[in-house]
Length: 142
Image 1 (tube, rainbow, N blue to C red):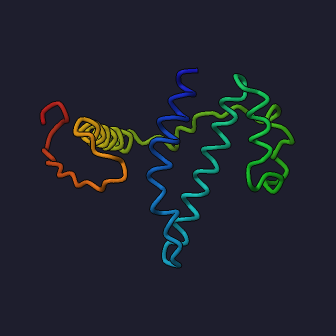
Image 2 (tube, rainbow, N blue to C red; image 1 turned 45 degrees about the vertical axis):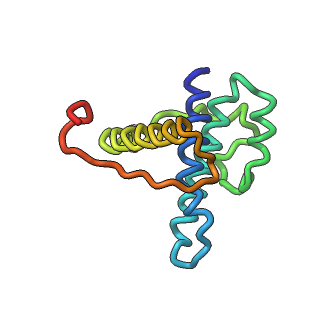
């Protein structure tokens, strides 16, 4: 349960949705492919997330899964119910430890910035600028 919660709240809502906002809001023709990729990735993340939550919340996840845009258009392998859908499996081909470490460092910087904003009582609507000094070597050496 803790891993499911962490996926939904931290990875999907707190990180991914925030990262794609500028891409989704940019409706220019030059951004068309990036916007489509961000939306398709969000769809995959939502669909897999619902399958992960299904054993713990069967009725809610079934209802949300049935309402996903594009349902019924995915071909022969698409099931009629989330109950019949395969539980998501890890695809090792998508594993990239370097990118994961880089994203973890980025998230630590973002958390530190958010913490500073909170310490100084800066409202979310107030735009702030942070300056980050990047040092070479391992994070524990900086």
